[in-house]
Length: 342
Ligand SMILES: *Cc1c(COP(=O)(O)O)cnc(C)c1O
Ligand code: SF4
Image (cartoon, rainbow, N blue to C red; front, side, top):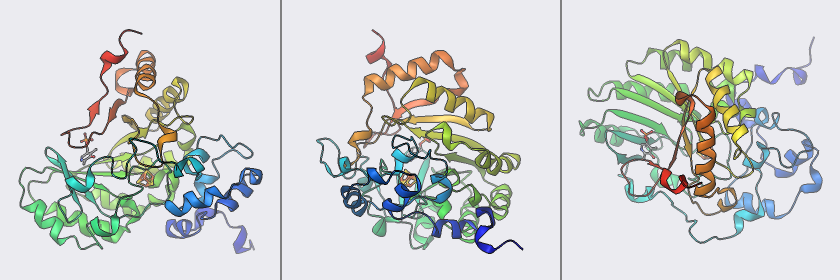
């Protein structure tokens, strides 16, 4: 008989896998044979924004490579502790836009619903790294005030589940929420913004596929894949059944210095996404959140990169290069004129 300890990870539930995530920087670095790169400042950075990396995601990192593009996204760095002008606690003005009840209503016809503050991973560049979830989630799963507000505004046709990561909610809770949304006649579309399948493909389990396949709302899922190494066979296989039940799969990435800021990486990402049945949607300029300045790519460079992507990719595989501007009524496409003279 196979001893329990040697059974493959796949037999664990996604909740168990979440529970087993790395939460010590030292341990991850040791397993990657990178112990000599450990610095005490990493712990300080991890105190400001916690360190958490599912083992599945860590297994995609290359041993002995401190510049691994997946590792760099999650490794706490001393640079996070430096204050840079222009990098602020709430770069999107979310706290102003917030209507109470976990609803962010900034754009016409659609709202973001902050369902939970929990994520399966802590991305160091996260624009919500300082977001006061405790007072803002829709919350503690008391959906009623949020639902009442949605019911009273017939101009809202799409609800975007966000967070944190909405898929860190269990299927039962998601189902309850979706059933409530289905009862509101003017809501026709459901969108789920999630990075969870990317760091834990087992999250796309059969009950989730069924509940998303059965909803009467037109449903899309926007996953968050930044680098081709994140797009594994496991992930592709996990997402495939969602497409079969009619869910539109889109991707958004964040442009990150030293991680995915080369033309070849971006082109490969877009082409690989298409092979996996996912369309590139947005390539985001980093939100200027305090502690993430070292990931920023300047606009000129970003536009140059995007133009070279455009020269290599069919139009339908070119993500829109955007940034979010506090107070604006949509995401802002980076102005091309800045780039035209080159
Ligand atoms: C990004 C975002 C949306 C969705 O915008 P789309 O352009 O529809 O993808 C909606 N509301 C808020 C607050 C957002 O930040
Ligand atoms: S998964 Fe998304 S919300 Fe969660 S830490 Fe990463 S970027 Fe932030």
